[in-house]
Image 1 (cartoon, rainbow, N blue to C red):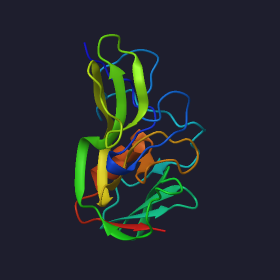
Image 2: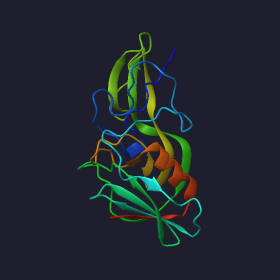
Image 3: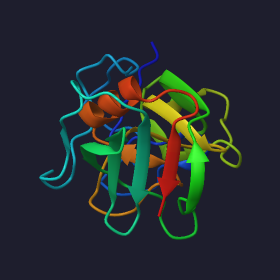
Image 4: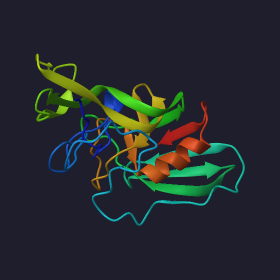
Length: 201
């Protein structure tokens, strides 16, 4: 039976995740579990306490705008020019950085999966073969199975780059995507629409 290890550092699509905690940078867990979706209660905890993230925008109206500050590793959400939420984030590491610029949300996908990254396991034993697989270069041999990294609440804004639930090690560590705590990715996801401006500084 095929199982998927718990997402431990939300990878992302063709642009996110890298390495951080022991084990998999994408998915990790004590034992086998079923594929994680956005509705699951099992989401990666931050490696360090999160004293930054908060949301106060449920009763505020106005056009949404997101500002991503790579230096501070924070994303700010505005409605009608009013700051209503701040999220701790993890952006792209050096060499696979999150690009600065003015963008717009081009896609929302609640239960998105990475097309390029994930893990490879032995089909018979369930043992991990590669916990940080790049499917463009890492081959899946006979008897092995690949699992694409889950990226719940994916909000695409720059090619393959987007915001989504992911593991936060306390520094920029992804393949370019913007990882967020799950509760904040839910709030951002619920309050953006295709066309919402995203400013990356």
